Length: 227
Image 1 (cartoon, rainbow, N blue to C red):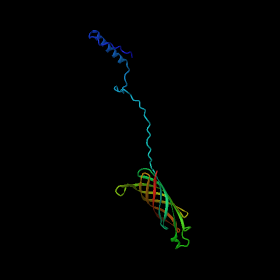
Image 2 (cartoon, rainbow, N blue to C red; image 1 turned 90 degrees about the vertical axis):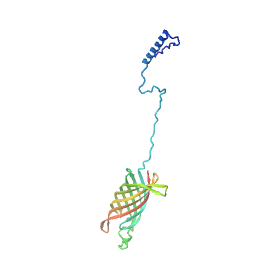
Image 3 (cartoon, one colour; image 1 turned 45 degrees about the vertical axis):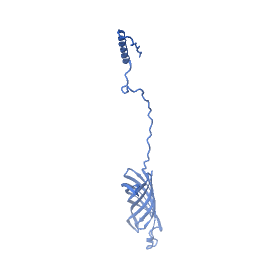
Image 4 (cartoon, rainbow, N blue to C red; image 1 turned 120 degrees about the horizontal axis):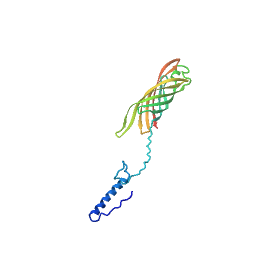
């Protein structure tokens, strides 16, 4: 755009000054018409247009803690052979806040001393036999709450129900087993918890030539780690 020559307006008022003012207005109008139209979105009062580069923001990754590993100890009461100690492991996956799936493996040693007092040789191949159990269960968190320790400390806990299917290996036999029970876990932080479980193992056992339903109760306590 050619700059307009600015006439002098400090001359005494008269015809020359009026012609100079008219010429200046005409030149200004022509200059505005020659300039390109400003952007519709531009702010006419904004002097500096910032050029800001967007930086990449990485989202924080929080551990889900959906898996739960447990080591437990307790007692196993075989219906025909009495109670003995048991130990095992459990691995759970929490599908939702309410539902979880869990696989368990445990073993115990039982004896037939009571039978050997009546029957020579007893009913087992040896006085002590190892009994193994493994199953897959589906659990439901029945309700949640807080356990208070004094007036200033409280820990979260959950009570749940479990039911599933598995196998019991005992005295060279393998029996299909139904498992159901109730349990509770007490949390100590985001990763650790202690749990107590009471379960019943139902299977048919061929003992003394007669196959009958056997109910075997299990009470265990263990430590859990969430990851």
